[in-house]
Amino acid sequence: MGAAPSPSEIFDRAAAEGQRRLDQSTLELASTSVIAGFTIVFGHIALGIVEGLVEPEFGEVGKIAGALAFGFGLVFLVVGRAELFNENFFDPVAAAVEQSGSWLVSPILRLWAVTFALNLVGGLPFVLLLSVEGALPPSAATVLSETAVELVHRTAVGEFAKAFTGGALVALLSYLLQGVDSVGSRIVLAYIVGVLLALGPFDHVIVTVLHVVFGLFLGAEVGLAALAETTAVTTAGNLVGGLGLVTLTHVAQWKGANETNG
Image: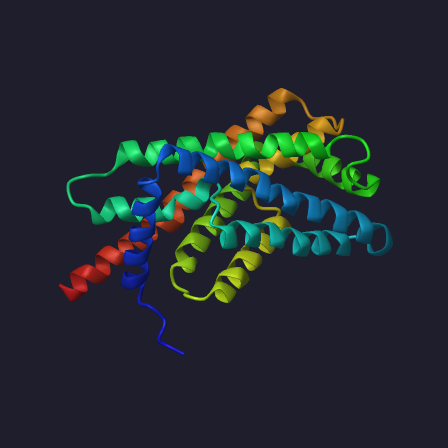
């Protein structure tokens, strides 16, 4: 077994991956974002079905079982190289930092805007399809509806804190994936982060919005105003946690290592 890469080596790998993402053609970026949108819905389905089956018999253990099932949704994303919105925080910023004289603002904003919008474009029709009566077991539909109601009735402060943590988790996953070389290691990392996201539940804006829309389509007491507020607060929390906590601290670590070696 080879030695683990140093933080500087991980950062350099991240920068190379970030540049690849920034250089995607419009067709590649659009298709990748749509694929990620409908892929993560499989995580919602797994959570709803498993929690719906386990909770009546074992109570709160059902939530743990649902989180364990949701983790596979993130595995599908990572192995398939599809990208949700704030998975694109760390790597592109690393690419921008490595380039002297340019912050790549326009390419980064393009990447984030297209990914955010087309993640939803990919996920919403699949959610609508699965909300048709009979598409999911009744117990799964109940779990998804009740969770959606819980999501939109949290306080703004609580929602922001959970989104901050979720953004940090996903950005940390992006960093850690650059530190491993095998598919097996990538699967394990993705699964652990997916389970932690669902256990909190800690919010990733695309995952949370699609979950709330599930409830909306299934007839839960979820209004459009509440959905809009949840989207705004979760996006802000993801940005601060993913960029402010994880990305900037690793940028500082990389700069410090360069100064030491220089």
